[in-house]
Length: 250
Image 1 (cartoon, rainbow, N blue to C red):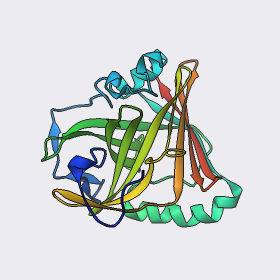
Image 2 (image 1 turned 120 degrees about the vertical axis):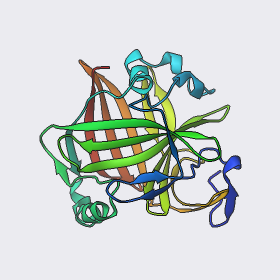
Image 3 (image 1 turned 45 degrees about the horizontal axis):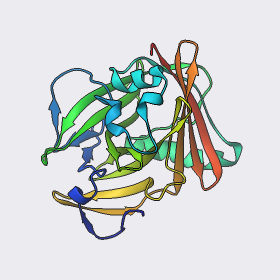
């Protein structure tokens, strides 16, 4: 069942929703949060904490576990392409995202471009925790995204909640984890609650509103020297863009 829309809801009843508010100068920052310690930490302390009936971390390939459980390794965007039918959409989205300061998907990447990744632990006033995950194109101040990541599970399913701040609201992308043999797929598709929402945060309550009618699919694949990830964005059933990047050293 999807989140009820348009009315106040308690954070405690929906633990995957984070109390994220942000600023946009110069990079979206997560206000009302405290950094736990210094330096870079893993995305997850222990992937086994996400185990559910449909997700068994021990069956994943060790390289995938290493990506989530060790501090971030190098990343390289091999290519990013918008579908021909979506080029008009890209011409609008790319400058708007640049102005808003987050989720800055480029219009095209044809040559490999290294990407920096920074992860820090966050603690919120209610005692809950998240990971601050910021990606930038290496050697520049050009942000790809800033997000707060939180794992969440039910007895049956496992999820990642990604909160992308845009001023006083944030865009929440709730991705379900699915195993494909020893490989992994993250997706907002074909699930009762996964999807994209606009969250208006308060101190104890939040309001969920509809998000963009898009779907995300991230497919993790083995490569000779690490992992490859194919990130696909869909509008309805039609793919808008695809991006392939490599995770080196795992």
